[in-house]
Each structure stands twice: as C-alpha cells, then as structure tokens.
Image (cartoon, rainbow, N blue to C red; front, side, top):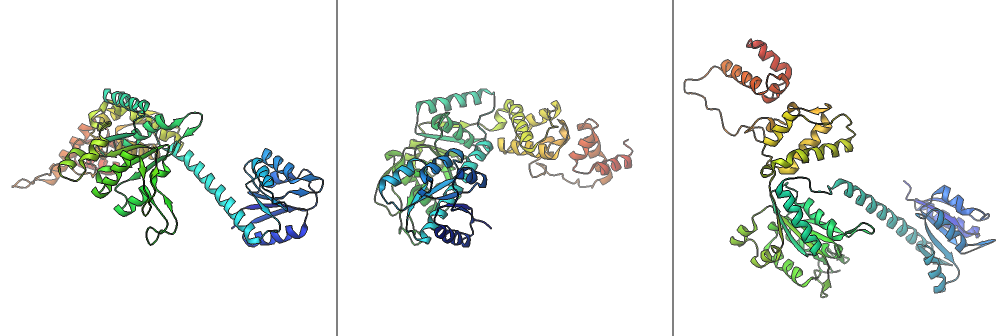
Length: 462
C-alpha cells in the first residue's frame, strides 16, 4: 500500500536517484525530473503528487519561479525546497511563497524521510478534519423545529442569552428532548460567523468516562504527571478555547470533580494535571442534564454552589407529550431529511390517520424516538403516503409499551375460558379498531397477514 506520492525536481541525477530509492523503500510512489524543466509545473499538476522536493537552483529557471507556478495551479500540493544556501532570508522567502519546509544540502536521508512523512500525515489529518466538519455539519440538525408556544418561548430565551453573550447556560429536560440540539443552536449564534466559520464546539459526556479519565479529558495533563503521560496533552477546555464546551449529563459528575469545575467557571483558568501554570480559557460553558438537579442538591449528590453558578441562566425543554402540536412539524422535518439522505423519492407525507395516531402517542423517548421511527419508515417502506400500518405497534395500540407488552395482564377467570372464543373476540376487536383494514388488524395482533386471513376464515368472519 502506497503511503503517498512524491515528485523530485533536481538537476543533480545522483541526488534524484538516491532520494528516489530511499522514498520508494519507504512505500512512497515517486516521480522525478532531472533534465528538462520547461513546463514542469504542468507535469507536476497532471501527476498530482502530495509532496514536491524542489531544488532552488535549476538550469534556465529557478526553484522560486516553479514554486510560484505549482502553488498557483495546485494549491493542495506541498513543496519542500532543497537549497545549498542556509540563509534565513531564503527560508523566509520560500515560506512566504507557500513552501511547507526547506532542507539544506547536504542533507541526511533520514531527515528527508521525516519531513515528507510529517507533511503527508499533517495534510491527511487536515483533510480528515475538513471531512468530519462537513459530515457533522450535515449530520446535526441546525434548527429547533416546532411552533408550540413553549418552543417559541424557548427559542426566544436562547436567542436573548446568546445575544447577551452569557458564558454559562444550564439546559434540562428528559432524555431525547434535544438538549444538545439547543446547545448547538446557541453555539451557532454566539460563536459562528458567516464569513469566518464557527469556533470549536467540544462535547463530552460526563457519564461515559471514569472520574480520573474525565478529569484528564477536561483539563489535560503535563508530561510525567502519571505513568502513561509520556507527552503533554491539552484538555477539552483548552481545545474549546474561543468556542463552546458542552458538558453533557453534568448531573452525574462526581463531587470531587465538581469542585474543580466550579473553580474553572469562576476563575476562567485551568490547570493541567501535574502542572503548576494557570492557563486562561475563554469558553462558553453549556451543561445539560436529565436529572432534577435541585433534588440532587438536597440529597448531597450535587454541590449547592455549583448548581447556583450554573442555574443563573437555564432552559427547560418540555417532553414531546407536553407539546403534541409540534409532532406533525417534527415528523415532516425528519421525513424530508431522511428521504433526501436515503434517496427515497416516493414518500410524500403522512396520512391523517397516521398523523392522528402519532399525536396521540406519548413518545417516552421524545424527539429521539420520533426521529428513529421516521428514519425506519423511510428506509423500509415504499409507499407514497405513510399509513397507520407503517407505524410501530406501540404507536398504533394505546397502552402498549415500547417493549411490546400491555400495561396490564389478562387474568384467567376461575372457571376458565374458551381459547377459541377469546381468539375470535380479539380478531373482531382488531378489525373494529382497524376499521376493517386487514393489514393493520394483523399488525395489531402481531401476526402475518396470511395468518390473519386464515383466522377470519376459521371463525367465519368474512
């Protein structure tokens, strides 16, 4: 497997041969030119190398001119200048023109290998970061969907907090209500500029890591701070500097770490594990939790001073069952989004019957559950209109939990019962509830359509 493409430009054939052999042995694909340098930038462009090693002095031209041409035609190709002149002015001139580095002759082959390796790894990482930024900008929702009074008020408060530049916000609500979405919405207003892009948004789940690892992730550590600390590491607060840090599920953070967090919030400086220096950080801190923090304070599970510090500016996201009027809009939003994502050009919308069932359902998993239901329908169904039979059983049948069980239990009478009579009664109830739609009635009983037709025939219900 090739590590990357390197093109060599030098009139010294011995240097070209030596470098070519060494780089090929390292797994690079190598091209070269040591005689004709006319229109060399065009040949470089057609070969599309990752790195060009370019001699400063060439017959009939100069490396500086070729460097300028390469950067004009192929800005993503990195150029390393080879020069016998080690004056600082030479290096500065090359760097200003876009060179990634320069090497002074005579150079060590190992030094060349390291420089080429570092440049290719750096560019690969940059491309990966750019890809991930684009991916996540497409993945995460950018707007809060809903027209209920509670959502309008929520957006109004969030916008006021953002425009005022508050540095700490607490967002509470049940799991799946969209706390991170609101956090990103606020971050976009505070730390995004249409012309310059967005400052960092760093999210960390306070329940996902043990206490000792969470501390090192948040604050970083110095080299030698503990056994495995072979190099220094920046923490999330440093990485989020100038942007936003999201502390997800802060209600589960251990008390010992809460005291350190309180200090950071008040002094706006952090100290790495094993470090002595105070490092200033300028971040917007957004904390989220699905717990009742005031109750946790009473139980001694959450620091009172930290709670009051966080709770100066707070937002509560109501569960979906308390804003049912938002369900149609959210459903349509995800339907269009997933139809585009999965290339479903058939689906158009929800039938009034399906919409009514969705509004009636309590959605214990809130917006996340609704999102998952819509995504599954878009992927698995091909109908233009989503009907009740396309919905999950728990949405169709009131009282049925997400696990597919009734809230209560059928109690066998003391004198027993005829299974045939019971079965016939359930089939008749299913038909009645489904308004004689056999497909939906079969789904209500969790049996196949063919089995349901057999039962209808068996009991003479045709």
